[in-house]
Amino acid sequence: MKTSEKSPIGAIVGDVVGSRYEWHNVKTKDFQLFGAGCRPTDDSVMTLAVGEALLEHRRTGGDLERLAVEKMQEWGRRHPHAGYGGAFRRWLAVDRPKPYNSWGNGAAMRVSLCGWFASTLDEAHEFSDAVTGVTHDHPEGLAGARVTAGCVFLARTGVGKDEIRKYVESTYRKIDFTLDEIRPSYEFDVSCQGSVPQALAVFFEAENFEDAIRNAISIGGDSDTIGAIAGAVASAFWGVPAAIRSQVEALLPADMKTSLAAICEALVKSQCQKKSGG
Image (tube, rainbow, N blue to C red; front, side, top):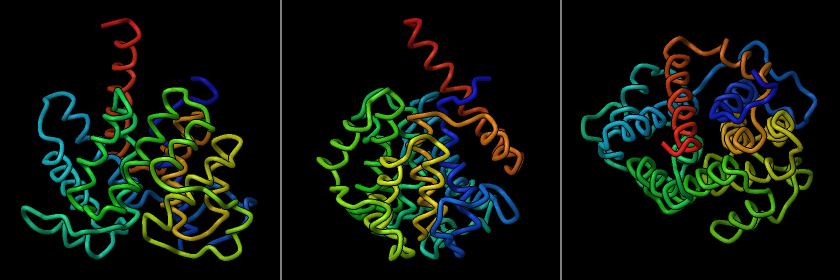
């Protein structure tokens, strides 16, 4: 295996590393990446649920919105204590659930695989809208998810940081602050508008994947979700060091490992087919 490989595991890495700092912010980049309390939370569970919906959509052409509802409810009910918000917990529990006008950052933390499965930027947006609108149909929820999926697609396909920043600032929001400026006062914020710009700034200031994760934790706030969003873009841009990947995979339950392996295998196969013209 290469030292670092572009991989869809980045969101899960950021979530796992950030999980023990969500309620115990450290406000520094000098911390231990893994230790007691690190675990996959709802960010990882829903990332894989969306990934399985996208995989099934690719295989069968089935309705992506319906598949997203089915997979999120299946995974959410299987992992009921992953840390869901109250409105989403209620959504998981009912038959034929409806969107609830949410602008929460849960919209953005789960859509990274839309950027991996998409063949074009427009398709990444379409996938994101489909899997997000079933819950987070508020304009801010849809926008935060869409720009996250778009950044992952651009990073995965070799677009440079300057162009990714232009995309963010022309379609979403200006990133007109530095991490040093916000670190002292940034607090827990569950909104997309209060999380996604910060997570993208984390990526823009990073030098490599691990640096992005350390940046994410260092600003505090909703650490697992900031880590998941930033990690998703960073892993598509730089790849994930093998040592970090192996440590995260060791913390995943069997069903998550199996799902992640199937998604990665499908993506690798797809990319090989495109390169060969198949």
